[in-house]
Image 1 (cartoon, rainbow, N blue to C red):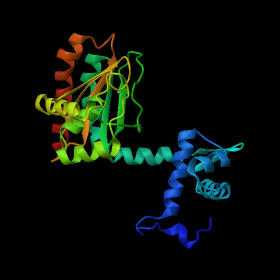
Image 2 (cartoon, rainbow, N blue to C red; image 1 turned 45 degrees about the horizontal axis):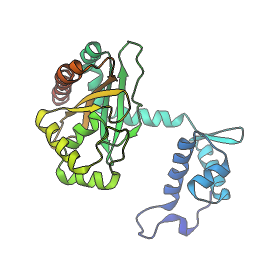
Image 3 (cartoon, rainbow, N blue to C red; image 1 turned 180 degrees about the vertical axis):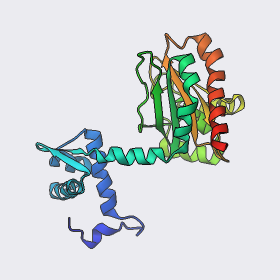
Image 4 (cartoon, one colour; image 1 turned 120 degrees about the vertical axis):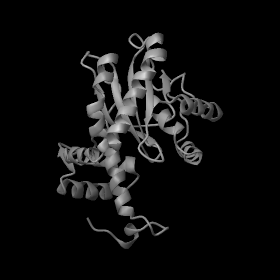
Length: 259
């Protein structure tokens, strides 16, 4: 791939356009679940010839594979993702501490970390009950509509919360999602006071979750939650039993990390 001088930096002089364009193409392949050159070019807003050059370069570097006329992300990204995930001591600690929560709830335990104002599912595991796993590892979610996400927001400085809401917004995921910012701030104050967050079908219809922050420093950027369907997470379990179980898990993780 040949780059002209205009490809190297944007107008501010602090970003490399060719790198940004490369990631535009990678994101296009992810969103389209594989695509031909023309589709990638249209999605990324670049000429077909440019898309072809970038795709060929990525293929030569073994980050993209070609199947027939379509390009797909290569399995090499799995190794990169696993490397980044395993750097998180948090994930390794959680794996040791969540067994009681899994056994007592029969739900899906999730660990979420905040990055760029979004929640990333760093780890997710479902109890051996045949239940569907309602989270997707490496998926990014808005923070305001999940139990783990609200737990994180409730423990961040007010300025940081304002910045996240201004940047990411408060999109409505279900009819129960809190989309009014004043109401959301009131909810975050309650969460901070009691030490846990509730998600009653706010992100996914039919799914409830309880989350608690994992404090490992001055700012909380991670949380643990357990999610499950309405027929399992009854009102008694949801409001009375799960909050204590989730908080105990988060405290155990904190102690383990600090020891």
